[in-house]
Amino acid sequence: MGRFDYNKHTATPMASKPVSFRARLIPGCAWEIVAHCPKKTVDFIEGFKNEEDALAWISGSESVKWIKAQGY
View (tube, one colour):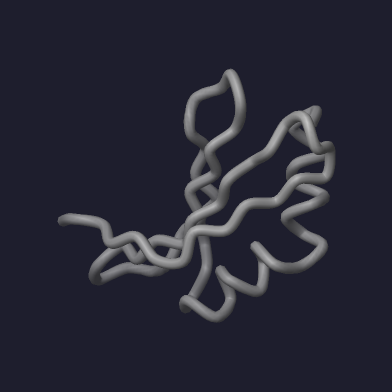
């Protein structure tokens, strides 16, 4: 099945290393977040029931915690 991309957001806890997040629908399944990190492959954060949950994660403190856990 194909995947559909929605709502690209960028978070920058450290200005020199931006991380880009994108909520994406997996048809027939759920939502995931695609994280584009500098000098790294793309990461997928799965397990969101709907778009609102994924966007809340992106815009909330969980995305900042995730970025810090990745070493940025």
